[in-house]
Image 1: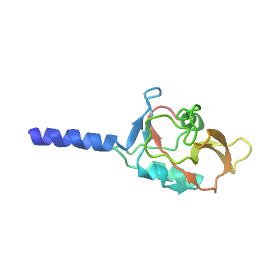
Image 2: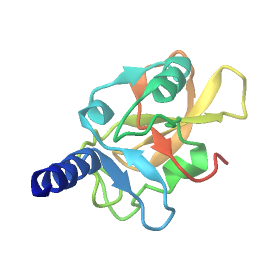
Image 3: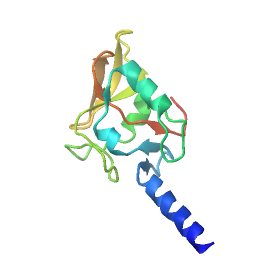
Image 4: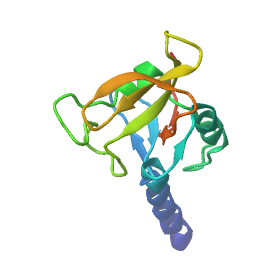
Length: 136
């Protein structure tokens, strides 16, 4: 019985190491090695998140513009992201929010210097999926 309990605790800690929980928003963020290696077009990024199974969860999605802005640390540079994330590239990450200037563009955030702007949906950017909260 002790072995089973210790295994379950160890497995929980292992799965938890791939997820960052934002205590301010309650959102859970993908923080495995894929978050610093996977680059996709906007539509492929959405599909990637929908298909992601991580930490025993399969309800991941591409974050909205407001959600991805919530993890920007405006007091940091290269990377400009909240403390606690382990797998980060100082580069552009997609949001699920279309850019207002046209249907062919969507918002992304550059975690090198905290800039957010629109990019053509066919461009390849990094993907960091989220779960929980509301997709606003």
